[in-house]
Length: 182
Image (cartoon, rainbow, N blue to C red):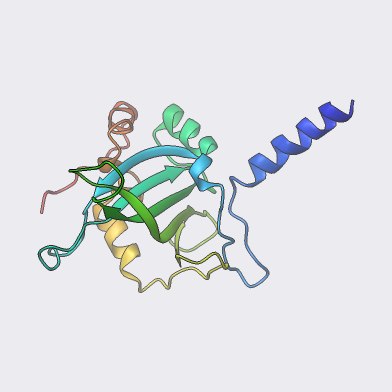
């Protein structure tokens, strides 16, 4: 009986960790278990601006989404309320151990979280934790995230165009927007 109760508690804790959690000041609590979410894709050296100085090592971007949001997307092609995405930015490295070529992921540079929240104006919020773990306030509506996601996202405010396993789902469900190549 105790084992069954403990199992139920563990499942409840796991599910609650997949919903956004806020402080009394409206700050998002960093979702430390985001690496247990569904992995969507990685990018290397992706930028919204002209590439930086030659010779600078590009960053890896890893994207994760909560499991329940992923399952809902597979069924509907849309993201349910309280969906959370985690964008993990890591340094790239190329010289370590036996590696003689190519790049691998190294230390964490930043963690950014996007939350779908039907109760907010615009229905989405963006949070930048940097490399820290303290709760953070949402970025202001004037932040570039809002305009960029609104103008360039393939499904709602998300960059499904960079998640190859979800593109066919969005096409089949009719939720994929036409995206211009700039």
